[in-house]
Image (cartoon, rainbow over all chains, first blue to last red):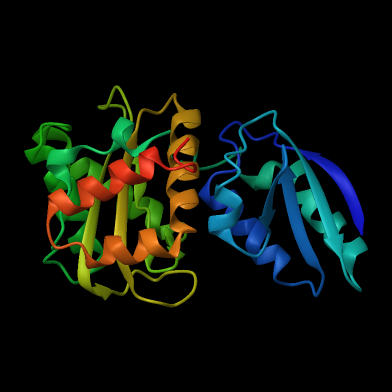
Amino acid sequence: MLHRTVKVLNSEGLHMRPADKLVRTAVGFQSTIELEREGQIADCRSIISLLTLGAMQGCELTLRAQGPDADAAIAAISHLFESQFNENQSNIQQP
Amino acid sequence: MKFSVFVSPKAIRAQLSSNTKEGVIKELVGALVASGDISSDDQEDIVRAIMKREELGSTGIGRGVAVPHTKHASVEKLVGTVGVSAEGLDFESLDGQKASLFFLLVSPPDRPGDHLRALENISRQLRDDQFCRFLRQSTTAEDIQQLLEEADRSQFGS
């Protein structure tokens, strides 16, 4: 199983729209992908599961993937975190 | 964040009469006006803002649940309500299923943490099949209120 630490950089945290983007990315891979915060594990294919993490800005999470495309999955999801889910430029008024 | 912190008991609606997305949003925002949590002067603007947020992607998150929400400068603290629709309705949810449980949230623009903690609590409770089933079967606001209180007391209600 591959893993990497990712950090929530966007000011609004891992709220609904970033979680939605994360799910849409995760379902494109065959691997199982999960995020862990302080022992709590979320399935990246489920928006409800991701929202239970309550991950705010600055929060560090462990990203794990297992499967044939685990490498690519880790890269794609890490990129989402690094790019702040592309939300900092627009829609500042909307949570 | 417990339900009791952000759900206004007087604004809970057990039998929503609307059968459209916009109708339900209007009905629940109206309930928050009737309960005194938001001003009637802001009612239309809040409905518009919530509908605009829906355009970015439905807040129907699956399991028959939707969490329509917006930020609005008129509120000083996070306010929310819960509505149940017996038949359910098309909310353009991510999983394509009808939505029957609604958690509507209006939060101050400068408090993203509170919004996130409310979402965290809602989603934790939703993982409990029994909670979802009982909520769907609730026919009075009192039943819903009682269920939320029980959830607040449970181990997940942090």
